[in-house]
Length: 212
Image 1: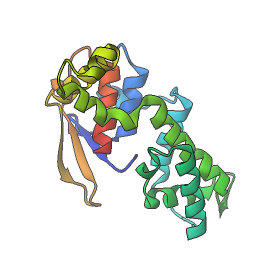
Image 2 (image 1 turned 60 degrees about the vertical axis):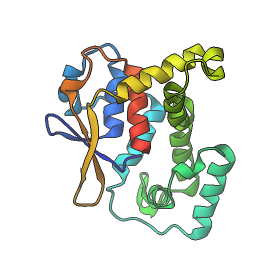
Image 3 (image 1 turned 120 degrees about the vertical axis):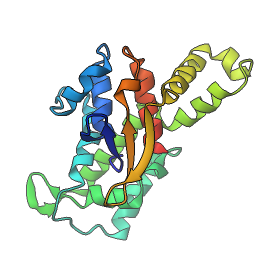
Image 4 (image 1 turned 180 degrees about the horizontal axis):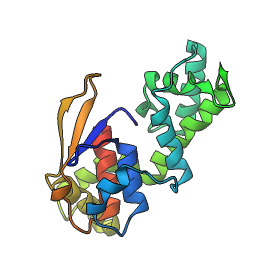
């Protein structure tokens, strides 16, 4: 989350969270409007998703405080208990970054550990709610045999998997180069996107690319 720079055709640099916000907020508009929305993101976004996005913006806040190994272990243990299948998604560096920020109510002190734990939990809960950890499994399902037991027993899941693969194969998104900080750059060619996209599939594709 928040470690990838995205460039769209208009050369506006945005994060994956901002792009996903646009898809989530404008499910019935064409992608031709995205360039305008990117320059002025709206605040009317789902609370959990907004919380995850705020962590991305917090990355550049100066004045970080120390996070002890014991405190890191406490946060790790909580995530491992609540999300045993996905808790390794967040790196130690990211957890430390979130936990080391100044407290919004008093910037002279570090935010409470419980507050950091709540924010990290929101990020992981959002991933669980939208099925982010299962995206690679969907690709495998879509590329597998059409008579596989999972396909026959779960036709709706198979349709979701197929839509995801279609969104990935438009030639509109590709990795190329790095920023001066060493972050990978994901390029989006909006003119190669469908005029009326399958928004859910597009968001799923972005989540999969961000986890790549």
